[in-house]
Image 1 (cartoon, rainbow, N blue to C red):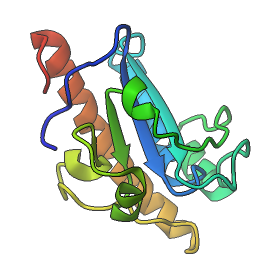
Image 2: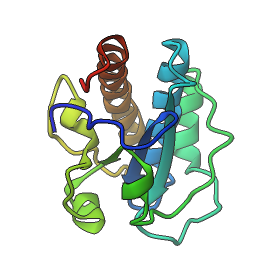
Image 3: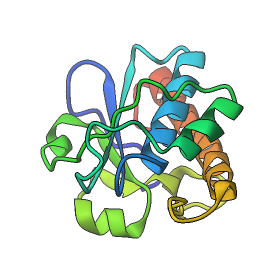
Length: 167
């Protein structure tokens, strides 16, 4: 996916971010993208959600290592509670961005589904690696990917907002 799909619902443009358990990658992306949108003045025009394909962490806060990485860069992770992805989100969200190809297989092929890093200016189409079973460094690496990709998504949304077309 090189462009954001057209808006299919009234109200804000809705973006869903999906990983495996919704305690590391997708909540980090959620917090960062929401912050970037707020700073760009788009918070009222774009709504961000995140979820995991698995339900074993539902209701729990994000992994403490993910939260620590976010806090270290000035983000607030405290509001996050894990949710499970529902196939109905394809009807209620304008785009579903998954963190890796396993998540893509779980969510399924659809014109509104893509890899999050399809928007990464450094490694377009790459995967966001799951840092859960690794060390703290993995969370910093994920945060770097998430920040630059979120900035690119915000740029695409700003172009879309200025021109009224998908960017």
